[in-house]
Length: 139
Image (tube, rainbow, N blue to C red; front, top):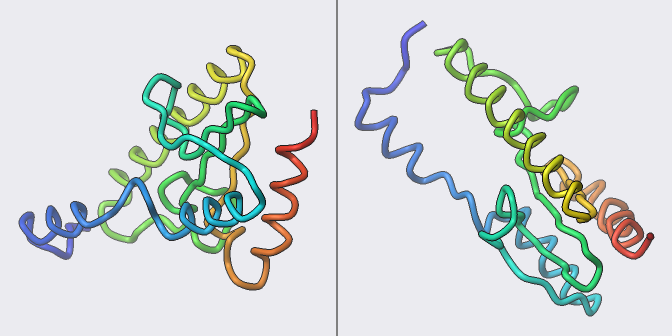
């Protein structure tokens, strides 16, 4: 199935998708800051440029969008009906890159935490953030 948008419209739509300072990322950052955590953002020296770096805890946090990172068994991860093969390849490549970065970070001694976009929905966000705090603080 062909793309439903002309190349110009598709290019514009894709350019509007943020990779930093997304709503889920801002929710986690504000929560951590309110709990006294201080962090760095998008450290280019680390594999995958983690969204949040907590040097004091030797921990990095990736905040993944369910669609872009292929969250298995999640209702927010649905491959589009147009250009299905292209999207499948794109998301598979994203997942491969995620795994490569996680492996590299762990090899360097970092604790890697991932929080998914769906874990920050209103009905589950409080529990997810409390769980995240516990994971940061645990050895």
